[in-house]
Length: 475
Image (cartoon, rainbow, N blue to C red; front, side, top):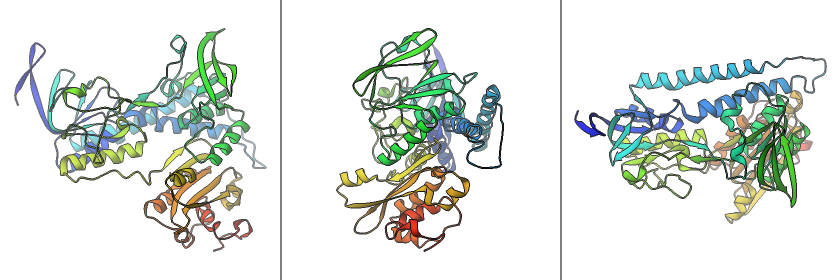
């Protein structure tokens, strides 16, 4: 070990084979794989170990969504059942914290200890090409993986700085459900939180800039989901341009142009669900020769290598798609390339994503529009979930399945689902898209009856026959 001057003092330099900046999904996947390959690894984290997903993202939000669904749908549709329930919101939040803490310890902190990874607390900043400083320590490595994640993007809106708005982080720590809430943003996060609080008794208004909610999805799915949300009492406004925000009479008032008409919306709380930005601030990337784009996302090649050949990057810090599963896969690939020189590339053609509203949305592959934009002659078929026996048995027939196939080969290009278990159902579609399966491959596969995943087979069969006139389990 050698000493190096830092400020006015000499500091011992710690040497590693690989240093990851961040401790979320991408960083952990990278650190675990690097350790498995025999590397000496350090992980630098300035905040809470585990990153967004476990602490303020997927884990707590999906737990609260589940609790809200249990409370809201407790008597849905079934005769002979009457269930009453009281809402202990502080208890719900307390349980959420306990679950987060347990998963963080078992799946993150204990993993660090088991693999002998060195955890360094503090803001990392490059001080040279091969060195970072964190909390007064100098860490040196031959290879680095930057995986510092993302943070909520708050657009400039007149008056926003004068009100106490919420992000998803603060929203999941409220002491009680507000009487009313305005959600700015109608994509995944905005809709999940809108329905979550609606199920807890909050009167919710969603303001979405584009003409449709979840605009990247198939238009039929966006339209149907909007209808279901409005049926539950959520006020959904699309084509909305937010002009200003102010506080008046103890409430927050949002002024917006809605389809050419100026309107005002008033609520107790305002939730900003307007996307996320790569978190590259404070890293002094210029000292390592790492380039970023105009959105502050780190620029990488197909192998996730940055403009500095000894540095890779993975996860939300690269920009869209910002998905926990993508981050984990990218972290794994980056570590293999950094430590074992595998020259692996990330494949995005069969990445599934989901929106955990109820019913859920899940998609993989190309939409009809995307296929046409690529010059592919495609065919599409859509079936309503009401044709799925399991949906009828459970008395939730909301939703549909749309399948996109190549017109000449019948190869499955995309699967798009709106259903109560869409996030679980989509994986058959993932395999179909990934391995170039045809509708014949799906039709020829025996499915369990009665299950919601039969919907994927019915969608495939619908290209060849009228599935509304089939008996159960018919081939």
